[in-house]
Amino acid sequence: MTTVKHGIYPKAAKVELLPIESSDPPIKPRMVILHVAGSKTPNGLFNWFLSLQDTTHVEAHFLVKKNGAIEQYRSIYVQADANVAANDFAVSIETEGLGNGKWSKKQLASLKNLILWLHREAGIPLHLARAWNGEGVGYHSQFTQWLITPKSCPGPKRIVQIHKVLRPWLIKQRETIEKAQKAKLVSKTKAEISTSVAKKAPAKKTAAKKTAKKPPAKKSN
Ligand SMILES: [Zn+2]
Image (tube, rainbow, N blue to C red; front, top):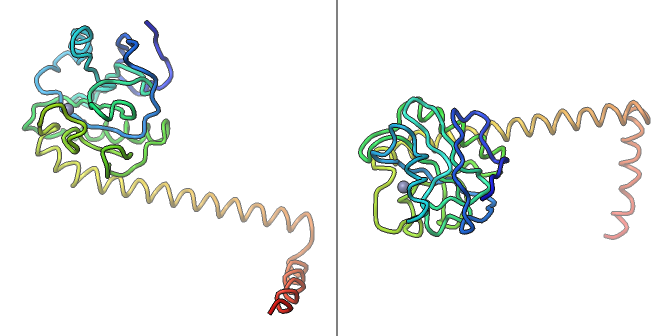
């Protein structure tokens, strides 16, 4: 039995790592798959998953509770078996609640923070999953390849929340990150220009160089 200590969410309220079996290899995650836990969550999912280790071997990486607390059961760099064909590349997030319910505001806030950390930590893209073997943020019943038997996990109302709340939020996050990257690039370029100008010569010389370069291009015509 081994424990993997990296890939642990720093803001997890509780980290209880399940034993890692030989059938759970290391993974490089590129997908997040959202679930609903059903009725088994009052005291978290650790004992439930532990009881399944000798039979179905099912487990997830995280549980997000209704009060927003996050429990982690496995490093994101180790396989958890909750998504059939996606187990090799997916981080599984269980959420407290019954099939017919909705995510609470606190649950959604915690989910967003966790998704942002997964983006920063493992580079999981901030967009909805477009293919079962693609990347991004998906939900369990989104692709038949992720299911053993047909089900609606994480439930119809949460699927609406994914499209109406999470999707626009993901778009906004991408825009914010892109803006920040552009601003960083602009300030970097400005800094480079000012140092090179300071080191070498004023702008006049650069202009002279540019005009000097033009004649050879005319020759080739
Ligand atoms: Zn599920």
